[in-house]
Length: 223
Image 1 (spheres, one colour):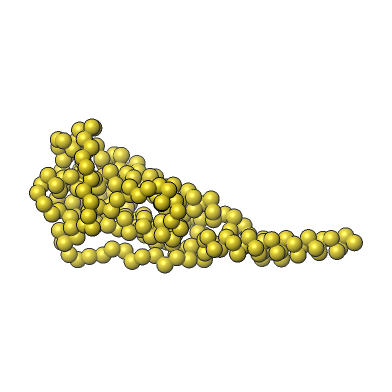
Image 2: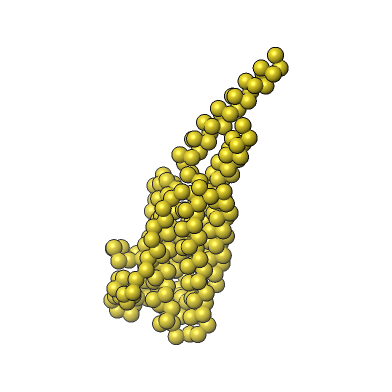
């Protein structure tokens, strides 16, 4: 009788594990057992970039001068296909996107923001500020690569990295007068701050999903 009970329990457990495994794979198609490590790396990079941005923002706004370095300066945001990608999407709508779309949007935004940063790096006259921008660009490039790695580890096809040989103005950056260019720089810092904050939350949500899936797979191999 005991053998029958144990056997039944094994069958029921196997069925439950298979069911949970199938449901989880619909949400996250994990193809890499180190997926959680990849997600953690991206999360750590966002937090490090937040720290770098705090150190960079003050000196850069002072470099732009008034009114951009005024704490109460809050200009209207320009919109259009050639403006800096905005993270001001409604949070409810953002949460309703699936993981693949959120990761793709993060990858696209950081790729464009990186192109913008590189376009202004060589134009900054102050050596130390230019070095800080260069270090930030290197870290941001690392985040773009890391997000692509997360997408691959979850079974998603990462979008191609934005690569262009055209001048910055060909991307829509630097058009207009000097004040408008400075306005774009101002909003660049704002958008970077919002994107990094939102990305950190995205990676935290992904981390909470991944361990359960990996655990089910390990248990299922035991049956």
